[in-house]
Every structure is written in structure tokens, then in C-alpha cells.
Image (cartoon, rainbow, N blue to C red; front, side, top):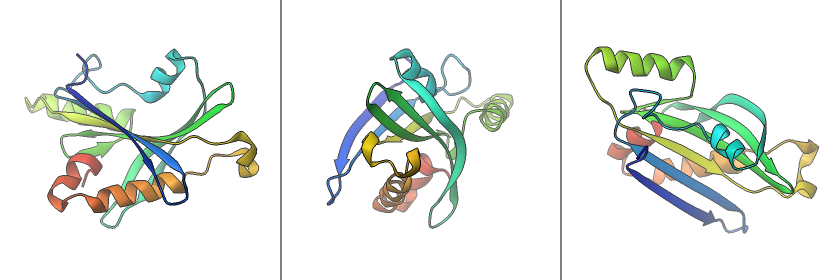
Length: 160
């Protein structure tokens, strides 16, 4: 199996906004066949169209977190998505940065574990200001999740 363990939860804040968290842990992140899959490919295979793909930074108290932002849509379901991948205790996004991390660990003889961290929410098409997704809810959730964790565990989920 690609992932050794997965966790999926939906959280609801005081305003009734729902946010979905998915964490997928894999013991071996050294190759394409064993590394975390990119959500944009998984959503497309489920019939969604993807738009607005881009990389951004989320400000956390101790550091900034590089994330991927995209929007998946199927019929009237619009799902803004924020994600990143951890390798060992380093957060990364897909592309050259992650490939170099995999290569560096492989050349040192390490088989590293990692996680796909995905945050998503549902957006009402009628409530979209300017037609663009608003990721402030995601950013607040990420910051709150990090602060809720014991400091020693934070690098495993958010890098250092």
C-alpha cells in the first residue's frame, strides 16, 4: 500500500464553517512509486476539474510554510485545497524542491518517511467574492492546528 496510515477529519468552527483535514503517512518517500500522491491528480481521477494551481507561503509563528493552493470543481461542488508534503521533518511542495530532498536522502542511504497534509473546504458558488477562493480559513486552521500540537511533534507535520 502507498500509505501506511491515513487520518480524515472534518472540523466545524463557531461560525459553522467546515474544514476537512486529511493526513496520509507513508514509510518510504524516496521514489515516485512510494511517495505521496499529489491531490490535483487524485481529484482529476475522481471527475473534478482543477484550476488556480499555485504555490504560496503560510505564516506560522516560528517559520513560513510553503504550500500548494488549488481549486477542484465538480458540478456545483467547489473545493479550495491547500497542501504540502513532509519528508522526515522538512516540509516541501511538489517539484524540484521535493525531488532534491528525495535525492539528498537517497544518496545518504536514508529511507525517509513522510506525510501528505491536505486542508480543504467547500465553497458556495454564490458566496465567492470576485470568483476567487478565500484561503484565510485554511491559513487560520493550519496555524491553530500547529499551535495545538506539542512543540516536539510540530516539525513532523509542518517542517522546521
